[in-house]
Length: 272
Image 1 (cartoon, one colour):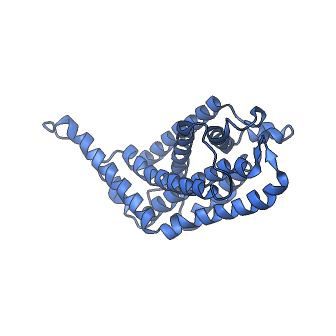
Image 2 (tube, helix red, strand yellow; image 1 turned 45 degrees about the vertical axis):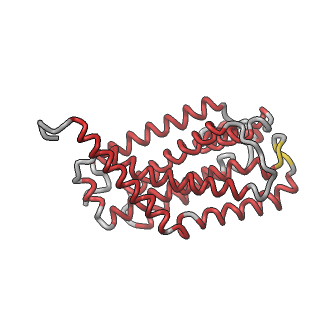
Image 3 (cartoon, helix red, strand yellow; image 1 turned 30 degrees about the horizontal axis):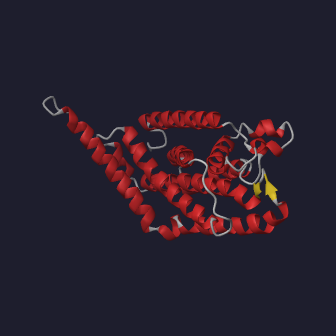
């Protein structure tokens, strides 16, 4: 900033830069909606049919609610996690591969603005797909009243933010397109399926119950299920206390956000 330049001009420039990145990311995901929005909705619909209707009819109830209703929060959260992660990892790696990310890196924009811009695209896609999945779930179960809309929205937003950062880190470290599939295949998918999406970890014997508490996705699924079904779910089916769940998610976000900023500053994965 020049000595005689108004102090607010730098803030306005950063705001314009952030707005530009956000518009680019949102426009991208909407332009290719048959790839970004439609497939996860169709996939989750199949989960509802197979696990909810076919298997759920034999399971009956879990925690005092129909099994279909029990798995809805987990399936919505699974969509939020996968879509926030995949949107950012594919978008940022494509920019890095095409070398147009260098234009951002040499600009006066702070690294935090660049990171927040790409995160916004991941959050937007995750929340959009999550809402669509929640609407689809209404076709398979009786309409239910959410216990707490603020808690439900907060958990979805924070989870999308967390995995958007994760996708950004994966994109920075990836050297070829095959590398962006390693983490989702070998880390995210196992953790998601073992994260209480289809069951409560309180049903597991020790030591598996304790081991499951080391899975960060358990905290997100449990908090989201709390926000939707707490008034209907029996207390013994609440895997994690809501305060602990929010604290864990917040710590993960702060840690990964700091790591991403440090990697951007060091140019890790960006320098050839």
